[in-house]
Length: 259
Image (cartoon, rainbow, N blue to C red):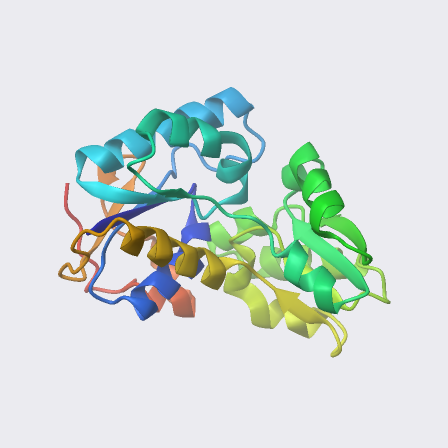
């Protein structure tokens, strides 16, 4: 069975790596969009069209399950994709882990892109799942772009800026962009020792497997990883190999590229 993950850049690595670890025989189709990245600042209609284009391409290539391991794509395009492909094709979106963080922390900061931080979507999630916790948003300007480019000084600067704007009493930080788990160690190093991090990659992967198994179809594949960059056969960028999840997905010579 082919599972396609759709993101503008390296944000698909954490969820993809969990899928690879939990079900190594799955065939994964990783679709990035270097021509259109980043998606966050783009108009919503543009993002919807871009994600729908990738979803259609995935179905043409035989994908039976679609995953949007990207907050921007999930916020803007998830329902459009579900309407397009119908109920026979599971489409799994990504939701920041606000609910589990708020359940165990009294004060929570949601680190996300500027667009997501300012969105009605995130405000609604905080209202729905924040419970009795005090939850605030912290915009991490430039962090996702810096991760995509492997720009270590820019990554460090963006993390330092976000940490400085995180209230000192914060007990939990939700990684509200799927790129951010790639630099977990750097984020933890910038925060007080007591702060706990929460991300959704493992939960999204587990939900994907549940939805996939519920189809009642054969799931075993050959474990290939196929990469399309803005629709073109290719490979993950060299910078992916700098991250553990990139290496799990084969961000080395053994990545399989096919059209």
